[in-house]
Length: 249
Ligand code: URA
Image 1 (tube, rainbow, N blue to C red):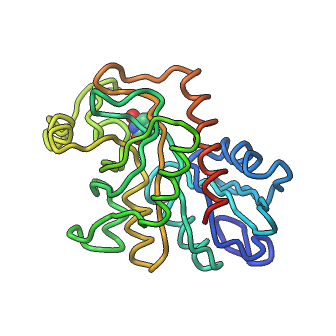
Image 2 (image 1 turned 45 degrees about the vertical axis):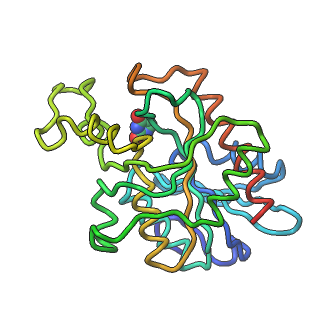
């Protein structure tokens, strides 16, 4: 039994693919979109898991919690149980003016602003997504007629200073991060989130496949706070995309 995720080989039934939302609250809905008969497996700390079947093939959904440290535990333990394909789904803040809310952002590579990925590979090692899985995500967005963009994501360890947010407790952002939002915009980075760089780095280092798709719930060139209807639609769109995608892996 894996210590944190509370899963073992028996429970996951040989599943090779896992869908990884950050939020434990999204696991049931996501897995039941994949397969209405999905079954609850376990829940411990930030890790909640369900098992679905598609044409007899088991598919896991397991939450990672927020950020690289908790994600890395989840990926380590699932990899050790034999999982090979890791698809992150989550929400994100778009930083380019033309990105609509909620539209999909499929990460081809991540700017490694996080600390976790450094425990696995030096900073000059790229955080890149698996080409095959990424193509499947693109294809699903097309088939579902969802707005999407592919490109580079910035992955930060913090939601506030690391993403240069001033709507925080102190309203202060360290000098190192002041102006970072503008610079990332100029570098054609599409969005901010908190897990993709760790996931993509770890998967590459392990020789496994990782991909990431996020729904833009805010466009930071316009506002800092999402509204609830956008969040609901984001969650539904992500569940629909992965439900279609896992049928093509
Ligand atoms: N998640 C993030 O990390 N940043 C956002 O702006 C929205 C979701």
